[in-house]
Picture 1 (cartoon, rainbow, N blue to C red):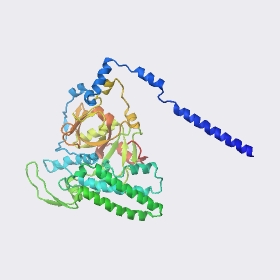
Picture 2: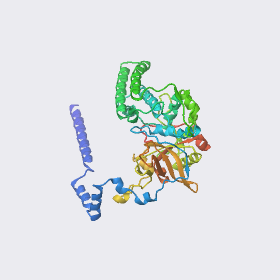
Picture 3: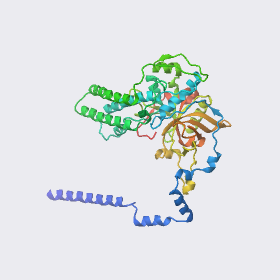
Picture 4: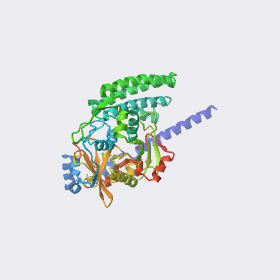
Length: 464
């Protein structure tokens, strides 16, 4: 029996040693050996043109070198259809593009309705409530996941970003329905709303501290009602911090306006909700998020798990369509003088200096002699591209009924782009636009019927 046990032990040791050796050998394979390095080195040729490129690239701004001169010269910023807008908004050093874009879709209606010289909603007001709601949502997610391992994938995503600036169209809808809106003069920007980095870091630290307390309470037997009671005390601290950064959000205010003809209205008292109902009067539930998720099947309804700012509201639900359908519906809405909220990958193939969004505006392929092309699906699949910024279409240039370029209102002030506006060429729309928000009246029945289907739930780590 002893001999048998000894044989078994020796066999196990032999297997383990063999496994380690095989594993070690596999790690050694594929490395940059001297022979491989030598082969690669010999493939490089230092000719006159390569030397000139080295001199150019090591001494100049890459984008200036790669700017496609032919495309730039051919560019114009003329559009045969424009929506009248006045003034340019500026989100400054904050991630509030979604909020600016959402409010900017409603701004032209107020300006036209009251014949105003200009008008701007208070982004700071809604941002206050968005931040407070996100703090509550984070703590509720912590309570919801209290029994999970700290390295659980969903929990890690929650903890990584407890207090983000970013958001979606549906966040705008939920906030306005719950809190209304106010003019910018009623709750203007503060230094912290315009530059959110340090505020976000400090409140995120506080929320993570709160998360540790709640999980420890749960481990010690606290009930959900007990955890929520403690959460309210935590939120009182967050609320105070927000007021210190934003000021106090108004419950009631007085507003009057001056028309472009210098006529001053009577002063009137509003609540934020009554102001939206009377002055704006838009049914935000009529607007449908249409996405182009190039990796998922089209003509399906999807729901993005954990994508909400208000805890007791549904996650973001979208219809996934191909780019051609997105373009068709966006054009239809725009030609009816309705601005179109959209989201895209603003960091790709666009010129901040010239306000041009066009594939090949920077001709890197000619500069390096390499092919950088990828399909939209592969860009998305391998994280080369994803939605990073929300803006508004306020004009379009068409030829024989088809769009050739789109006029974009950004929220980066009037110093970037063409006095704050950008020209998006239609080919760029194909490659980098991922979302448009379309009123139901511009959608055919076959698309609206998708809303009645059961959504497919996307995990929070999905690229969209």
